Image (cartoon, rainbow, N blue to C red; front, side):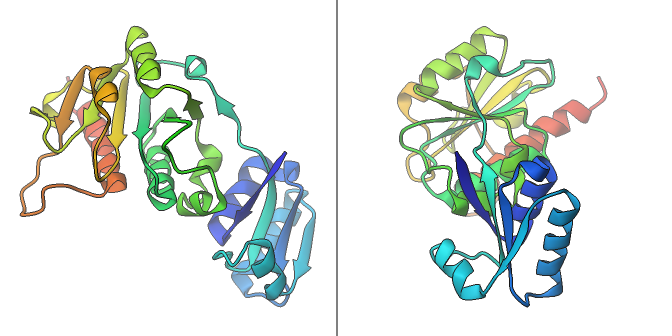
Length: 241
């Protein structure tokens, strides 16, 4: 099976990761130098490159923001949570009820950039893996270790049994995230913006923690909260013991 990837950076990352495993890259006929550069990059990696008028790219992407380039790529590999390697420095990001593909993609981008070793989410009540989500991740999805599970609480309990400290972010958490020891293997759970993590998910966590806020706004966008939480993990790990 294959999937559609579009946008300059998502296609560039798909070429970088998959090379000639891509079925093809299609670039806009007479496109800008940036578009042509992606085409040359793909050709240099042994990918078949085709040209097409912009109206054809519009049609193939359903009017998506393709920026003049698309790729037909292999399906993403989805692992089971038991296939995640757990090391002393492992960082797992778990998503509960993230329905917006922009948020989902932005969280994946932060997770990959900040060293997360796995991303876990439930097969229900979640944004799908889609071209819009791939684009929002700016191609980071190609580098991510992905785990889609039937039951997020069970997955979190499985991680805890393997020595992972599981922490849910919640604006009403009884402690701040900085007060939790994040130097061993951790899983950061990010819930839906409107409702937070579900009660069953919270019960599967060892800690429920909030990000300290100094201004009049009491909560953050889910992707921003996730990025700040990951920075706190890195901050603690860089402090000399």
